[in-house]
Amino acid sequence: MTFAATIITLYPDMFPGPLGQSLAGRALAEGTWSCEPVQLRDFATDRHRTVDDTPAGGGAGMVLKADILAAAIDDVRGRRPDCPVLAMTPRGRPITQARIRELASGPGVTVLCGRFEGFDERIFEGRQVEQVSLSDIVLSGGETAAIAILDACIRLLPGVMGAASSGAEESFEEGLLEYPHYTRPVEWEGRTIPEVLRSGDHAKIAAWRKLRSEEDTRLRRPDLWERHGGVRGQPASGARHD
Image (cartoon, rainbow, N blue to C red; front, side, top):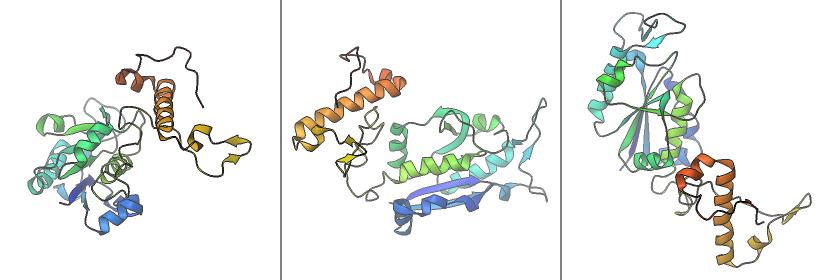
């Protein structure tokens, strides 16, 4: 089954963009997933193809119109009724790897890209749209965030990644950051690969990787560590075991 990615945007030429390269690009060429950019202006009803208007109550910038957004969503949903619609907005809930896995296991996703001051809030009341944020940053538009979301989904599709275990051992898959990696040369600028990784003892290597994953998460992302419930049994010193 082909994973259908539909992007409602004012800049359809941005797609597939980077998704046309590397693993995602090869999967696109092989038909593992499809990319359909939809021009939002095609749903405007005036000769100027207007999609936005000034904010009610005053203020800077422009707001994407609910009626135009609804027309675009309805058109796509009529063709892809089983695909959830995500709106990229800083007001949305931060996306998680767990949600990415859910999306990747489905028939596809429709991504609504914001611009200007964002969306008329009534679109979320009148249509079933999931508000999603990539991070606590502000971008010029939702297209860049949409590319990141789609890339995260595409790499999980069957056959896209070479090794089946590659996706399962990444950061966030178990609620933790991934352990650090090393490769040859053994010594570089006086720094050596940790001895345990050169020992050939797979049990010790696995234990070291688990410990480093937990310690790095606790130190770098205490929010993830708390959600993981990792406070139990963690040494107070936080000493590293390289």
